[in-house]
Amino acid sequence: MKKRFLLIPSCKKGNGSGHVQRMLLLYYELKVHVSVFLLFPCKVLSPGIRELVKKIPYSDIFEWQLPEQMDWDVIVVDKRKTEKDEWLAWKDRGFIVGIDEGGPYRKDFPYLIDIIPGIHKKESASIENPAFIDLPSPAHRKIQEGKYPDK
Image (cartoon, rainbow, N blue to C red; front, side):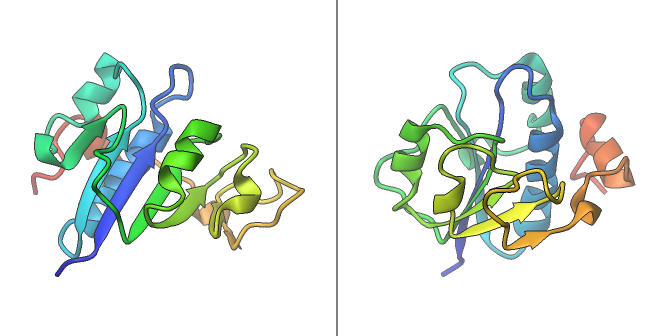
């Protein structure tokens, strides 16, 4: 049976599309190896995010909250700040990886990736590397143009 991954980008108004684009790149890379799904923890998705995800099968997307019966092998959270209700809903549902997590639950994430080293000085990350910063690569341009994953 394939491993199950859940990717959770920030979709909060004002956070930009970088979190979503990073998770979409990860989605397309992982989907040939594992079962991968996206959760958008917002009640309403912006037209920009809807445009970015239009080529992803609807069955791979959850909006607002997860079905209660589903657990995951790995949950990747790229939200800036995980809220209490989110942490409580996700913490026992799979191994959680946080990307640039800056919220009060940062210390509780079993694995942290900081793309901007030193930004969170209190708790160190498992790995810090500015090379993870999304640059305008051809894959990024395809996502922005709504053409990915067509090859």
